[in-house]
Each structure stands twice: as C-alpha cells, then as structure tokens.
Length: 227
Image (cartoon, rainbow, N blue to C red; front, side):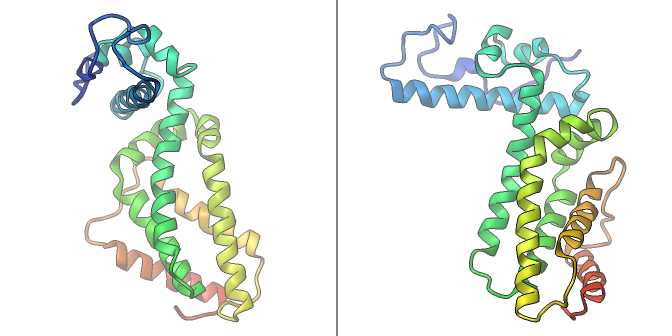
C-alpha cells in the first residue's frame, strides 16, 4: 500500500539522533520530555487519521502508520495499546472540537430558543462541513458501528444532557410547550447523526443557514413555538 506523506516527522524533534525515541538521552528535563511525548502522540494520531480517511480502518495497519512516520511499530505501542485504541483517540479528538465550539458559542446566551438554534446550527456546520469526519464515519457505519459507538458514547451522552437541559429550560420559561424532553432529545440527536450516513452530502445550493431555518421550523411546529 502506498506510503502517505506527512507534513512533519519524528525526526524533526530537537534531540532526535536516529536512535530509539524512547531511550533518547538528549532531552534535558522532564517537562520537555513530557511535551515531546504529547507531540509524538499527536503525530501518530495525524498519520493514523490520514490512513483511516484514505483506506478505512480495516485496511490500515500499524506497520503502515509507523512507515509513514519513519519509526518502528514498537514506538506506537509506547503510546497506544493497539489500532482500536488509536481509532478511538481519533474519534474523541474530532468530537472534542465540536464540544469546544458549542461551549464557546453557548456560554453567553440566555434565551433557550437561541440556545436551541445555536446547538442545531453548530451540529449542522460541523457534520456537513467537516469532510474528514464524514470520511471517518463511513467505515464504522458499515462495519464498525460498535467501535464507533464506543468512541463517541461519552460525547453523545454529553450532547444529550446539554440538549435536554435546553429543552427543560425552555419549558420552565414557557418558550416551549410541555413535552417528553428525553424522547425529543434522542430524536433530534438521531436526526443530526444522520449526516454521517455514507453517501449523504449537503447540496451546495442549500446553505447551513437555510437548512437550520428549515429544521428549526419543523422543530417549532412540534414543540409549539415560533423560532
């Protein structure tokens, strides 16, 4: 299989002498060593993600990931248990990006209706606009759904709690009518997840803003408010 080029490599790190990265003695103190360990782990994840996107999880091996970086497979095992562990880290890394975006966007918003709009809008933008995430999801959807669920279970639980809280707040403030918030939260998150279905792409003629407005109109009909 073709070796993928990497923008950076392990050999770019200061102090690397061509010997084992683990046993190198050219790092003067622990803080620097810890920092370089984090950087090395990041490079492994970047190389693995490229492989997963191009060839899928099943056709990617640790030998190929190591070859892309010019290191031995033993070095990868120093940071990750196995290929599944790497894949789970990649999924969590991508979901963390959306989590941070949501937290920043919602922190100064008081209106439940506005919070719901932002929550849905950010999911639309992220899921339909992040090509790498979409490609990563193709393989799990077909063959690795249990692994995919394992990798994102914590993230989806967090999103469920966040969305449920928004709906409950809207009910208390009489912005939303009474509803089964658990059921509605699960339904909305399931609809948002459908953007990961293989082959689905948001048509360029439909902007995120229009899609969100249409979706919000549908939601508003269901919960009895005009947003």
